[in-house]
Length: 190
Image (tube, rainbow, N blue to C red; front, side, top):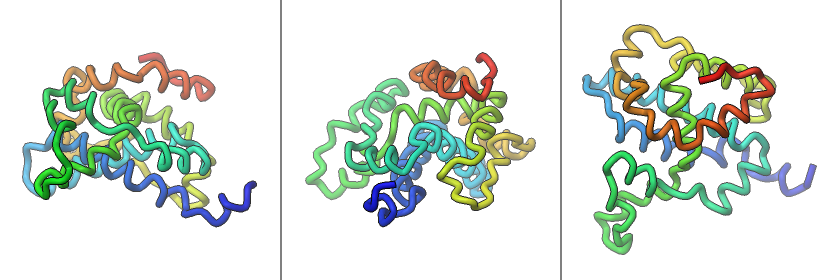
């Protein structure tokens, strides 16, 4: 292992801005219509889906480090697909526009994969199984229960976030790459 990788920030910390921004994009594009608890449950499900997708997309510390250098790409195309276009043209010199700067950390592929996981329970289970022994967990117990086995309250809280028809345009963007990534782990066809 390269010496600089050993001294680099932990992989979770490196991917944190990408995971936070992409989860935020999903919850803003597909918001919960309930109160504070429902909003928190939807955010948790989005974060779990995005975390699994990011860990699959960037499986090694080197991959995670490279995405922080190159940048994840931003939400421009996703915004356009969902009808929130125009946000990417904001002048970031304006204080009000700076609140949109988080969108530069949104990863389109991760958002698409997360949409696949949220709308297809079999894919979510296969994706979590594919993470067994991954470097990201680093020996820590990680649970993705709300993603893989949501209860009725979870489903109700994230009705838009888990709706297959609503997520279809985003999920379709990179579904094939997700299925290819899961293929060695015998992903179900979706």
